[in-house]
Image 1 (tube, rainbow, N blue to C red):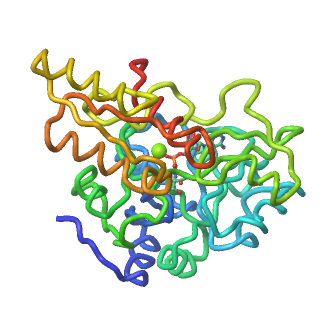
Image 2 (image 1 turned 60 degrees about the vertical axis):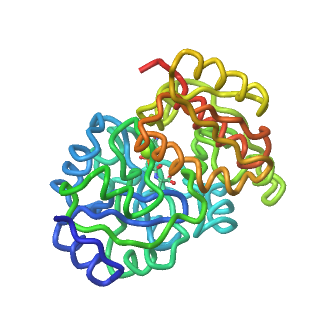
Length: 306
Ligand code: TXA
Ligand code: MG
């Protein structure tokens, strides 16, 4: 039986001896292994059932440590200084030190310093960063509690560090700093407009070939079908129709509380599966701030394209 602990020292020890651990962050739980342990990283891919060419985010203790693994451009430096530790992942050119296994053979690496006190304590106890994709099976809902990790990955991980429920509950914003203008590859808690306001750095939508695997059409999905509505009335109407057909449905609506939406949505989708509800009817948030990221994730959860 996988042990759940709240001891960062024990967690660092397990990582240092080649283990794979569930690690809390402020966004979602990650599945961590040391960047210099190829065997442990292979296990991360195998446990997640993730295609091996899908690259992994490197989680470091601070900006200084990141510089060993990626070349921080001026824009990347400014963004890191402004937001790290925090829910921002920066795509930069890689150094030779990082392995192809982590970058999927690309010439870039995704770097992030998470803002979670005990995760940072763990990272401080290592001489190198860790890789940490979200600690769920590929394509499914990300975990926001230690219990979610246990439910999804059970005996496959060596240890789970319980850092409580993730404060944000939705994955980090990913910015590509290798293009002429910085581009958003994945929206997140930090909205592009706010980042520009704070840093003066212009941010554009992604162009060119798709780079982040999280940009796949179908992702972040529970077992139940996800249907999306702009208003509560529309969701109720659809629920009535479902009931007439004898199908079970549940409305997920958080009103105007975007933070609660982000914080609760993944757990509520998991609850729908536990209750064997057939359809989750989600009332979409307005496309402002973190609402953009919530709409992105729900759009992918609702998509039927594999
Ligand atoms: O909030 C988060 O970012 C969480 C926590 C655990 O930090 N992590 C996370 O990792 O969401 P993951 O693997 O589920 O999503 C990371 C995304 C993937 O779509 C991956 O393809 C992309 O980042 N990515 C990582 N390295 C990349 C690279 N070098 N080039 C392009 N995309 C990359
Ligand atoms: Mg993920």
